[in-house]
Image 1 (tube, helix red, strand yellow):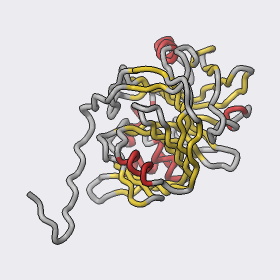
Image 2 (cartoon, rainbow, N blue to C red; image 1 turned 45 degrees about the vertical axis):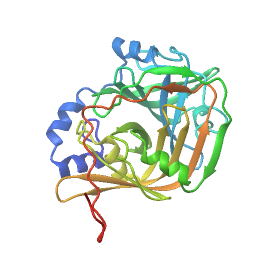
Image 3 (cartoon, rainbow, N blue to C red; image 1 turned 120 degrees about the vertical axis):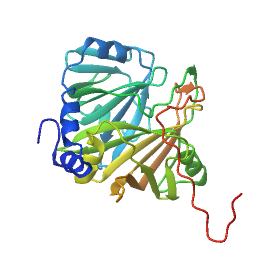
Length: 305
């Protein structure tokens, strides 16, 4: 380790040429929850959690509740009231003391986000996380949305599978936001955000996705994890309906000669759900940082106007 980075992150930083910048950014990472962070958490109606299930597969899940259901209860500890709905792939993992989890609180209203990783402690009304890494990210690639209402009913898990259905593939192509859980360094889990214009996630086949890795904070925590451990879990929310698509599989990073980066993800398991208590949000105001999508290359013999 060098500071907060393991060998995977350091290798990617060196390959991209941002080691010095990453060391500077890394100074903002701590284990304590500052007052401003505690206040931010107390306002949030949802929390993304990444962890491994009993079979070792990584997933990212979404917890929801009235503001205050996530709160700081110590200088390095948060408490979450409630849990995941029945059938969620991480419902069992979030009831086990000692589970390693990564969390991200993202507020579409303000384009702010905060990440907290640590060790889970089961509680009578939910769970707590003892933090070993706390930091904020910039608002890059975050779409702004306003909350509309909360759905009182929902059938729960709708479908499980090992590949995307046609409707699920359509939803992935239309996504402007998703969350990804990765792990390495003795099991430490990261939950991070990816955003862009609809279409930035490509569906290459029912079992393979790809997305560009846009320039960020130079830490390369996610790509660093993937350099050591290919397991990954994706969470793709449908903001307007509140539906969730969770994918578990394996990912790898492709580095282009021009300095670009692309992640390819192989789907191994899928869960589609529509839970009661889910939040519904307005149509997005896209981030001005979103890069334009590349124009498709016409097939041979086709014409353009």
